[in-house]
Length: 459
Image 1 (cartoon, rainbow, N blue to C red):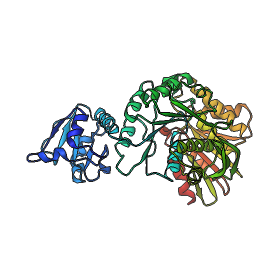
Image 2 (cartoon, rainbow, N blue to C red):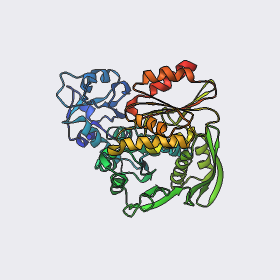
Image 3 (cartoon, helix red, strand yellow):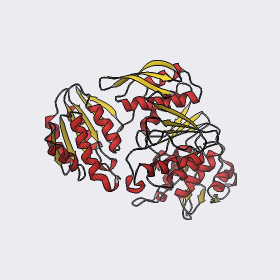
Image 4 (tube, one colour):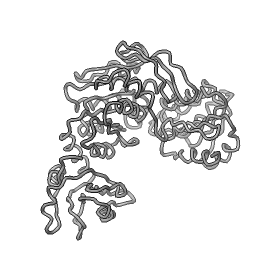
């Protein structure tokens, strides 16, 4: 952070700054960052303790001071703390207030990435392109909610020239709050898919909730839209400039998309009429679409074709997000961080292009509302269409996937289990050289244990 003295922080969060005896000069000291995890405290950071269901962050205040924290927030008066603190009613609210105030101090462009599917991958792709020219601050992992986003804003420092932030929601009103904090100059909308239906009901509800962000953009802001999405093609951006990307002749488009094994995808990219070939080191046509979004952002910030191509060709993914892991001669598609019908089908399509035997290890998809069983059943049908060899499912809802394959008398060898441990007992023995294994489920299924079990067995 920059220019945020303890005095300014206290004003921003409507708190009372309490200084130790003889420490009046500390009020003008500048905090270098803000974190809510005492393990991540650095010299002159502000520690923001939060009260959770099992842990009270206030218990770690002294540890934060021992690691160099300049000050801490607190929801209660502290007895002889080792440094200054700011007394507030609610530390979670104070974090948002701090980030909102700090955003007003910043002059760098902020790119907000929103959408139902592909936010994290698109954020990574955009960052890869922009890093060819700029010092970029990006969201760690998927820190995209009302705690993660303000923490990300608070990580911006003097050296950063642009920030790429992921913004995720599950209900109405959340995007208003995120938008008010980030005030993005550019917004990228990846798609409007079937997720968070438990609260947003249908795709129209999802569109309405996500487009709340436009009210928090500057009038000259730019909205980059997936032109292949029927809900986005006519989206009302409240007068902000629209830029489209996709596969149907948009300003940023791609043709001749060709898989390069399981690790890359080649395409001819068109950027405002100029074309070039790029090999994106990630599988699947959806990653080409993510690359088009990145090209659109790069162009808005003045990057040329060479920079865009270089950025696309060095793009990487993160653990749990379509991450390709090679163990001996086995390929694991680690996509176990989250799942919804759109992303599940995209991953199955990638698996369907495996050069040898394909195995899908799938778990429940969450927050799908009243149609959750139907949507899982449809995944079973999609597995059949893509000729997946083996299917292992775990979870109550995923039994519908198995049911769809059984009723179709599918050629897929389908097996369903109540627990991950029971599934692994049957899965591990059948894996052999040349296999490609997709591991995908919503985060609450904890399918990272499946990835680790396969790696441990064959490393």
